[in-house]
Image (cartoon, rainbow, N blue to C red; front, side):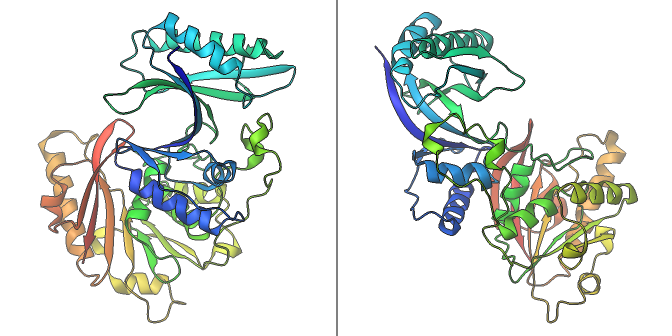
Length: 405
């Protein structure tokens, strides 16, 4: 048999996210209620971290971790790349696995991750894993049925490992499916930034929420301010009741509530956009995220402002209660030009980048972090980045860039 038992907590993100994901998890676990240390992870490429499974660490990650796209618990793996050998491998190892959900009945679904080197289609791979799980659970007295709409547990199958030792891995989703679907964005603009990437952008900016203002001068649908507010106080993005844990014995006795991990942090966030229609979407999304009202009047300031005419005096006027304001950070997702056609449109976009660079140069001592998917951005912006990191927003390839002014 080519199957073997696994016991890893798997954090998966966008390309190049490993260091940010690792730093965020350490920060969160250190402030959690658990007396546990996070060991150094194993890495698979630049977008996956593997930790020895600890239900306490998994609880923190699933409830609070913002930069990962998926969080799962690896149960077993097989060297098989064909359907019949995979089925023969999985059934005995899953049948003897006491970590599987118990009870008389189980509704489950199977999702397929990256599996391009498996010698069958994703649909066929999903089917054979489903059949192996049904047979394994039946041997344990559990009647299992597929339910894609409201499953008790979601199993994930993917090809993983180093290039020279790839395996087919089966695990359980712990983090509530795709992590960029926070549920707070009720209105979206053109080419919105995924929430997970917005969190990475803020982490890469090295923003200190206790002492530095954060300004998004092209806020759009407010993804960056919402993530910044959550990161500042260590707010949860998932509640234990929303996660598939009630059928997993490993999570018995763990907390049912998710208090802020950094309570009392009084962040200063400025959300600006030149488009009045964007202001409406911005307010709607902030309201859906619970970030409006008297409690947030002093921490999240909204304004209509063209980035090209932005000045330090304007920011100081928006934050009158901040005396002797320290230099802060800009976090920006500028337009990429994907939807702008023709030579005239490109010239207008490059002129915008140039004007942005001139405006932000007025902010001596400030930093900026941008996600851009236009290769001409740096040239037109007029500033040399202090860091360049490849990334992607959905299927759009781009880069994280940081600048010092």
